[in-house]
Length: 495
Image (cartoon, rainbow, N blue to C red; front, side, top):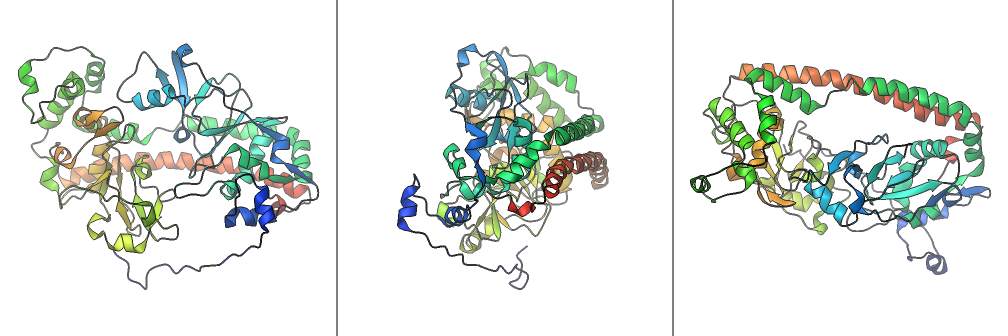
């Protein structure tokens, strides 16, 4: 897994120097003098420019009276993709449970806004600065206050696409630097300027551009209805292969009142008496899985399941070559290196027993919304240390991809739900619990066949997603073409 010194990438370090007068620093409200901001600010010398705030107003976020809420849609930054599409969570204060409790806690603390039609929302937190939303008519979706709420003074649609497709790549430059992720504030947007000729050209051509964009969006909408989530595919295959009765399972999940004897509380080492541990759906899943195999995860372990390593801010290194695998980096069921932080070489070298390897499975062990989620390491080029709030599962004589898909099934994830310990958002699952969970004892040939069936279906979905991305690139092309036709260089559109 370790690369030799000759295989490691060689990085060129370039020193950037800027001169700035103290009185210029003093003019900035927060006395900023970081190199990104100083370098950026020195280039804003347009003689005929339009400022960001000439076009859009930063809206002061109004407080929502949650007493008026019953059933509603709520979206956090993670519920918005990079093309601006929103998949909100359907919530109701009358249906508050373990799975959505973290949302309600944030909402009760005031983390909620209701933007108006044609408002533009920008994420304020890196690594999500590229997430934009245009609020549509009658949408009625509540959003987290982690979005900056903007109100276009006119021409909302063309401004939205212009901002999305051109300027948002450089938002990081005006964001606030710190030990953690940079944060963008509404007041930082006042520094951004645009060349007037470009903006006026795009506005003048909006009657040509917007119908074309509308056509592209209609085509992508037709394609999107064909997409089936990976988890749905995985569950369908496992349900068919193992005869799992999901109808009975769903019916039992809706049973919220049950009778239980005192002796039932003593048949586990912790004397657990929570509803989730003893509920009928959990008992049903456990019975079905155990009836189909006598094997446990521990029977196929190459190494003990271990928790990862904690980290301090000084151990991070933006120029590092090795990653730190946190719970956030596997929240989408894969290790996302694009948003993962990198660590120093000394930290990596000091933790040889807390590193990932090809075919390892990393599981989140804590946090509502992430607990139980898994990612399989499918690229040996990605060297990393896994976090203390994750655990590493390393198998032998067993197809790791089959295990990964099995861990993603609704039945297995419900075992996580029933066995996790703790209250609210502070719930945990531990290696000594996971290793006792049942694991199907079928031949490697059967495992391979199931993996192949799942991957074939998922690959078909990826083809559709690729078509969608190609069509969405057409929106960028329309904006770029309008700029080229204005006889102005694309690179002259500066932030």
